[in-house]
Amino acid sequence: MPLVITEAKIFACTQSTVLGEKIAKSFGAELGNVITSTYSDGEFQPSYEESIRGTRIFIIGSTNPGPENLMEMLLMIDAAKRASARHITAVLPYFGWARQDRKDKPRVPIAAKLVAKMLEAAGATRIITMDLHADQIQGFFEKPVDHLFASTIFLPYLKSLNLDNLTIASPDMGGSKRAYAYSKALESDVVICYKQRAKANVISHMELIGDVTGKNVVLVDDMVDTAGTLTKAADLMMERGAISVRAICTHPILSGNAYEKINKSKLEELIVTDSIPVKPLSDKIKVLSCADLFADVMEKVHNNQSISSKFVM
Image (cartoon, rainbow, N blue to C red; front, side, top):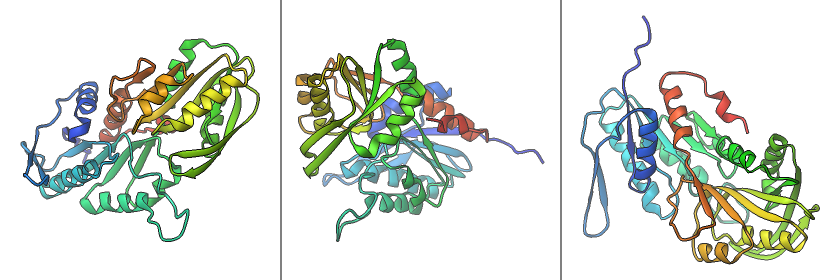
């Protein structure tokens, strides 16, 4: 008997509604109807206002802090499971809490593992995400994980700039693998920043490994939070003779006074995706949408087609 592929339905959590609408449009579907009721104490309850029985549904929502974003995703998954959806795919453009992927000192949690288990316990049957903070987080799941790379979005843009003497830079040692992958695709040199932290989000010292004199530098990272590392690295590279410094960061968390740091820095441009909503507070920030990438992968997943090309950096 041939496999019958039923209609797929797409829903979005509150903070990812705009991105969800873009993905649904690219997918060729309407965004599903969800109503969220909120109690006076802040407790909320999402409700699907259409039947999802026996269907494959995609729930789009980044789980960056605050905790209500993760909680809403969990409630949406649980509601879908109890409404008898056949397949429940959690689409997490940004997988939050991922920086806690190991015990880096005694008596601390491994939050990324906990989040993975909560998503599965809620009822997710598949995960689609992009540029995890650490690739090995995929191993925290027992369900299939499609880990996409934003390089398929960034590389065409970088090539369109036609920069001479291009050099790719990693803002820390941990991002060197990502920087080398970009440099291979762009046939460029690589430099690495070595940094020491006094505590989380506070850099005590930074040094540059490599030469940037006369180079157009592009810093590559998976996320930008307070922008302290990026702006400090950009200023250091300009001091060392770089012609220009740009940065590409998949997930624009941009907390605290990040926008102020970016505006005051020597960064010429910060290129990000819309995995997290970006406030229009800086002319230096350019947003490239990840909607087409997710829509393409979701369509292939729904039709049981290969998506291996999306895993290539």
